[in-house]
Image (cartoon, rainbow over all chains, first blue to last red; front, side):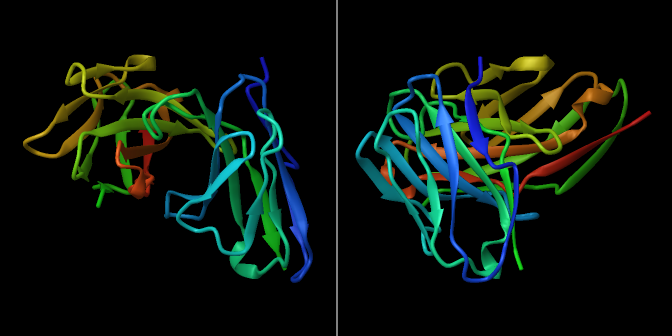
Length: 115
Length: 114
């Protein structure tokens, strides 16, 4: 029972490089989310999706892009990596329901350093 | 607008003694409230949730929380701490009004002393 799977677990990027953080879930959840977690700051919502083909901005979307071509996958792309994007990134999913009313299932995170 | 404040960034208790992690929130509408736990190098795991049913909510691993509307609080408690409870705990609030999305508290690190 995999749940939410994120790859890679760790990555170091140089300033200006690009990369895609992968996220897949096997629970057939319609809602998926991307967060970043900075020390002492809790989690901030970057983007979310309420179903395949539908995405929307969260609290801190600048510098990121997402797509949702299937129910299972929700990749997060950094086009021009900047030091401010050094963080731990979490993907989550939740069952159909009113936005925010359902508990979320989290992956184990991707630790990203931009040097 | 909604917000959530975890009143303590660190809490230390001895094994076998009660745990209290404090959370205050503000919300314009009927909020959903959650507590999540995060162990080192892991994602967040749901402990319990409140969604306008019973005000005393029981969760996993012996944790519970009480929703007090008059005090705008949703404190997390456990009668007897165990070493395995050492982790970071997050209080989360969300509303039916989608404009405000989901707000996470900054977290409380729970230390268990032997």
